[in-house]
Image (cartoon, rainbow, N blue to C red; front, side, top):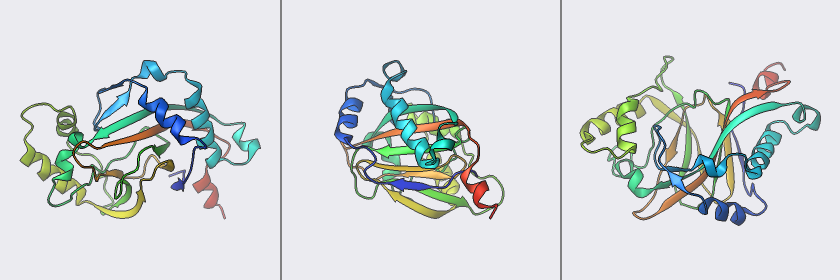
Amino acid sequence: MNYPSLQVNNFFENPDYIRDYAESLTYVKPEGDYPGLRAKSTEQNGHFLFQDINFKIIRLLYPDYTAYSSILWNTSSSFQKIKYEDIEAHMLNKKYPGKGWVHNDHESKFTAIIYLSNHENCGTALYSQKSSFNTTRCNSQLKNDYYAKKPNVDMDEYYKQFNDHYSKFKLDCVFNSAYNKLIGFDGSTPHGALFNLKPGEERLMYISFFYDINAPYYPIPEMRRT
C-alpha cells in the first residue's frame, strides 16, 4: 500500500457547474462488474475538465510543488450514475441491506471518488480481510449478469454468494457521501459502496482510477522510514 485514505469536503469551487456538465453527457452501460451507467467515453475524452480535476487530486497527494511538477501519471476517469433499480437486490438484502460488493481496484494505484448528489446513509466503506488469504475475489459472472440486468439471474444464489463474500471482511471506515465531497484511497484497499436509494432516486459521482503514478516518493513508504 502506497497511499493513505483521505476525505476533502467542498472539493470544487463551483460544483454546480461540474454537476450540470455531467448531466449534459450521454450515459451508457459498458461491460464491467459494477452497477449503473457511465458517461460515454467519446464525449469525455480529452476534455480539459478531467485534466484539471486529476491535477487537483494529485496535488492532494503531493502538495510540494517540486515533487508535484515532476510526477507522471495516467488515469481513466468518468462520471457514473446509479439508480435504485440498478442495485435493488442490495437494498432488499435482508442480511446486509444497502451493502455493495467488497472488492479491490486491482489495476488502480489510487482511486478517487467525488460525490455529485446528496443522499443520507450512502457512501463508501473501507474494509480489511478477516483472513490473511485473498478473499476479495468472487463470482464476477454472477455480478456481471445482475448488473447487466440479464434475465433469469438466480437471485437466491446471488444473495448466498454475496452474503458469504461480505462475511469475510470487517468494517474499517465509512465515508458518508455528501455533495461535492472527494474521497480517495489506495486501489489495493478492499472497499464497497453503501446504498440508501429509494425507487426513482439516482446517485451521481465522478470516479478517477490512477493506473500509474511515477513519483519521486510514495507517502506510506516514506512514513515508514521514520
